[in-house]
Image (cartoon, rainbow, N blue to C red; front, side, top):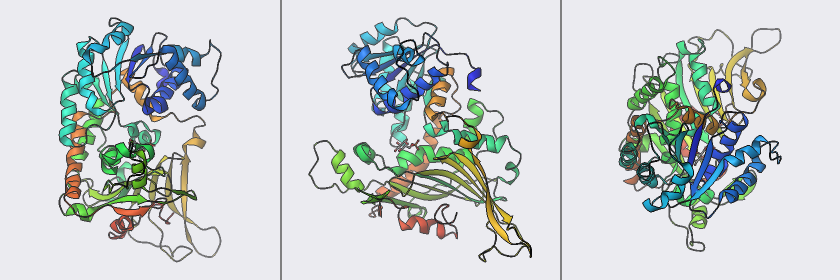
Length: 505
Ligand code: BG6
């Protein structure tokens, strides 16, 4: 457990230290861990950016952010909150200019007992050059670590190139490729549910399970990120990483140990066993969509193309570009191995959906023969269903058939066992970045993606992208605030199934 670890002495160098990710996620996460006593007194956080800020200017900027999000922020100079601010430094630096690293080198001083972590929260095209710059300037030694944020490339060859460039400087053990979904509490709970309980594993296969659904629905749109997002799309932005990682954790074999290679070896086997979706199959097994204007929470919102027009610098007033980037994708795949033969995995993600809900749904097979009369409303008892709710309202719900109370025969009624994390563990659930940052500082890469995993995921995704690119069809429009294009419903209904949450629960 985290509080059993000794505090860590580290220099965390955040390249992109004034950016959105640093401000919204990394600094609040480090602040929480510092409050919990997990950073040693001599740990420092050094933000690198091109902003003309001195140390105090940066501390003011961060404290303004933290004051808004941290509970009980204290202005007492002797408080932990102020101790955290004193850890912060800012170095204005153009990382692409090899002559410009002097101030950073001087601030850090010669290597000492502190673990040096280079957190690259910057554009992926800089991952290679920054790694090389850090080595040339003597900032890398055998104990250093580098953290790479997504996107790790936009296809297999660009991912390989980044991996090659960073691999020139750091060994694979020193490289931490982040997928923040793996740091989410419910995602780790999936491992606990499967491997610390004897109840599910005997049924966790094609004999016991009818199908699996993995849905990550967001109510937000691409908004101010639309310009960046347009070069990516939902398949690259969400499926290649987050959804495939979730699929791996559902489908993998029990690892022999919970260690860096045992877990990642098992995930890799799943990725390599995924049924390829190529050529015409892509049109049968995938649906891509793009949101138009609509209503979210009763308020009108713009469509994707309008957002894109507004997000493009200097483009206001020009006609909406005919972008064919998908903001929604649904697909059907299978894992071609002994355990999962014939079990469909349905994946679905989209922006500007009717609600924010991320969940993994494991649908068990029905009983082979029903001895009971039908449900109250005449249907037969629905088979068991396990729903892992990633967000919001993290928890696990097991849908069962129960007896409706009353004399006069047995009438079945659907009921659920509910494990709400908020009710069961009356404590703040840490953000995914808190867990993952501490894993980096402690040198535990189990929840990070290994090079072969990333490349296997791109190898699977790339034929889908190729097939879409070669197709005259555009993404199907759907109004913002809905559950996506009707074709996504048809994709699963063709198999006689429905999406969980679409009126069936
Ligand atoms: C990011 C994607 O990786 O994950 C974003 O780039 C997306 O487009 C985000 O909004 C979703 O993360 P979460 O933790 O809010 O589900």
